[in-house]
Length: 260
Image (cartoon, rainbow, N blue to C red; front, top):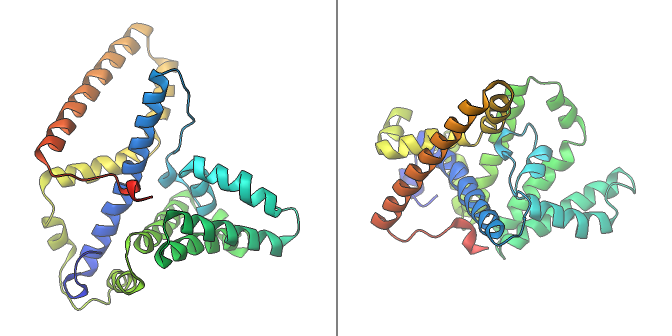
């Protein structure tokens, strides 16, 4: 989004929004987990705020997994008082759009945030009709692809400071960019640690860890489970140490959601 439109190739625009899609998730989910951990150290228990949202198969399911504390607040204190889905289809649609209009406005007094909220509200409305039935009939991989594509396009609106830059970025994503460059050229701009971080982000956004933990509890011997748990703790300590070194060597880079 920060590049001039003339410098942004189609491949680079898709790579950029793919990286931002992972950055905003791990940024917000990460410091939510830190808050949960710190609270537990003082004897308080906070609910989880994210449940692998990019593994969702629809925008509706995505909002049951993303920023769940905010979603529940809007549901309990706005959507339900407005009538929820108890007063007919049209009223339900109006309530959904109203909630997501205010959700966008909650993130900032900028029209791009409002557009992002209305964009998600529109998909929630459409998924209650023919679009939802069409999605439900599709194979699971295609449903995941649909969700990720919709969310990535939405993040362009969320990240852009103006509609002009958002439209220019979306145009580049659709292949309407004056700049030339292949996907290989875009990937070559990444440093090795960025490629590693991108791959780790893909793996980390999927719900394989809870399932592997459940499988381990069922089939592994208690002694083997204890050994593996120690190895996991050691690996986390190494990752923490490496992260601290990178933070110390880098420049100040605040959390994205510190803006809100």
